[in-house]
Length: 365
Image (cartoon, rainbow, N blue to C red):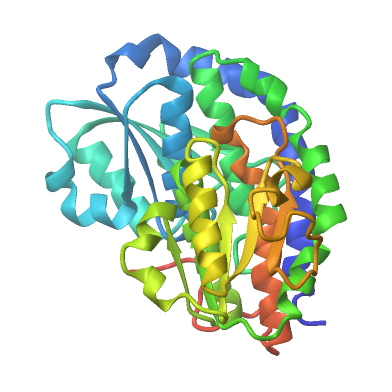
């Protein structure tokens, strides 16, 4: 059936997460021996990638900065390739984190070359292909263990590299409390997913939604950009992603009863985002909220329907995941739901997400 390959990838990602967590002692040894002795020499940390891997880099850089306290800059690989002199300085020493599923895309290979040839950069690749050009050219490489992705659309590759970036971040600065929070991320997230994934089918069964808006700030900004991209790749439907408060500045004018607002709720701006979502609900939008808080605690903030349940006419749907996990590393828990939403939407529209239109496994310039 159409979509079977990518659904398989989505369901298998939890297994890969477990393999990553099990390899923490190996990653710790590599980081302790090859990066930590010279960490003080780096002036800035660069995160980069292309396409989905750029959105991955964007989310990872924000989490890295919060976990380590080190300043970061995040750029698309093409910006480094063609406009590096606008962003980088010859006299600085850079620690560069490069993300890629294939490790062969021209932009990321070119960016790595520019950094090596023109700047004092120590390159670390977080990738899915250990034998790739990027892996071989990097000073240090962390490939996703036991990785194989059936479909061209990236799902488990994205989340697996995201998890690896969390691990890299906390090991670099010995913030080992994060290991405690992540030790059961695979099993807990799978339980959340299996118990609640039907919410996607409930939302899409409404049949009246044609405008898809993703909202997320801080560590969730890159994730909502990626989720919006997934919807376009899979179902060929236009969508947009914004940081929550920016949605008020113009885009809100197009919000109506045909709009689905998909919001990853933060802790840092909880009150502001709840207020915004209530405003959008009053404009007729359907709200899908992803949060770490209890469903009953969240419903009370939508005062006109304090007792609402899933599927009620209130048009508010809530998915719970990442409970008890710090904001900077819990975004991974929401991605399987958002990936499944894109895939299921495609299937409902008669589009095969296993064979996406106009896409290739490796982008060539």
